[in-house]
Amino acid sequence: MEQTLNKSKISVREISKKIAKDMIVKNHYSHKWTSCRYALGIFYETDNQHQFFDEKDEKLAGVAIYGYPVGRSAPKSISPELKEEEVLELTRLFIFDDYGKNTESVVLSKTFNWLKENASDIKVLVSYSDPEQGHLGIIYQATNWIYQGNRFRLMPNFGVKLTEDGKWIHSRTVFAKYGSHNLEHLKKKIGHTFWRAEEPEKHRYLYLLCGRKDKKKIMNTLIHKPKPYPKDAEQYYPEIQTIKVESKGGFYE
Image (tube, rainbow, N blue to C red; front, top):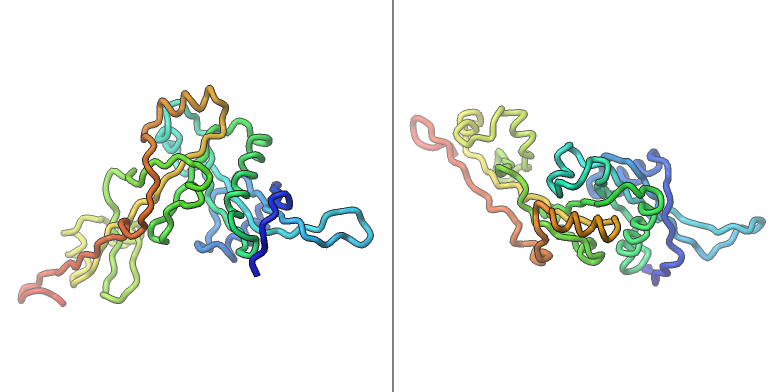
């Protein structure tokens, strides 16, 4: 049963990466571990008190993972004013469902405070939401992150499936297996009708942790200017193309 959230009962502190990894792999929709600089446990104080000790009884309600962005160019893709060590990415966030409404927003705010106190060199947080999972980044919108859009690739990436009701093969796997994303090359390599769709790019959000002076400098030098928050998930669904491959006697089906 969903309970009414008591903000004062939520606290955040660093936990071991082993405990954090176990929770993410078991419970996060990706079921995958990721880059981690800080593993922050999300604790909720229960109404139970220890019988013999004057201590609070807490439950580990979730975990937030902050890591350095993959690729040295990531900070410079935000602003030329930023150094690698000044940017962290919120790579995973998981909270059990039974802690009431707005829990994620409260938790994020508390992780911001923890980072300001314990990682004061960090100026900017970046995070992504995945349209393929139906995510628009509502939690980032609720906590006033800056939205930068979802067009950061130089070239589109296409996933393929080899039968109409088959599973999609990620673009990275396609390249590893067939050696190219070029359509004519894929036709020759696959040799029969297949389906492809452009993989939607993830929405990118920024949150500025730094002081007013640095905020102004970064805002004035953003490579990608702020955009209105996305609202319609369906507009990011890819169009599926049927690619017919011609044989000597016609087309393969």
